[in-house]
Amino acid sequence: MRILVVEDDPILLDGLTTGLSLHGMAADGVDTCEDAYSALATTTFSAIVLDLMLPDGSGIEVLRHLRLRNDATPVLLLTARDAVEDRVKGLDEGADDYLGKPFDLEEVAARLRALERRAQGRASPKLVFQTLVLDPGSLEVTLDDKPVHLSRREFGVLRALMLRPGIVCSRSQLEDQLYGWQEEVGSNAVEVHIHNLRAKIGPRYIQTLRGLGYRIRMEAP
Image (tube, rainbow, N blue to C red):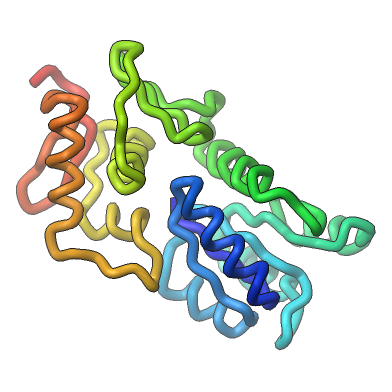
């Protein structure tokens, strides 16, 4: 899950990007409207955390820009707790949810997972394929009701594939979901994660389509 955080407070920005990464998300941070526009023009995000008060404008302007180009990426607004007018305006301009400052990081992560789930039309918070179950909230995976211990990257790859069973995800698409701008990506990192996943959950779930990418295997091997 790739998140863009738009926040001009450097301490809060660092806390959000670092904290969300511990919840299994790849979080990139910017602190101005201009940088937000540049990020949105070049990168696809699963959701956006957007502060309203920015040094070169309002988060509402960023939100309006997003919706005018028919971009439906879910947006979570950060507002002062007593700023009712700002929350109403933000929601009417196309925001999907809001959270008052100060806030708890656990709640931010939970709201982002809920926004993504809603955007994908999923009712269940868990991803289930046959006897393989992935819980984005607890970062736990079970196979045949037994826990499977995965690294953060392995969890991210499996989550991306289980979100779209049967649909091919290219290596670059998986890298985009796993790594933020500041993180170095090894040339064969995805292949290594896939290899490790197969060693832990068995070879039957993940299919390689040479030259195209990977997918959750829908048919019997």
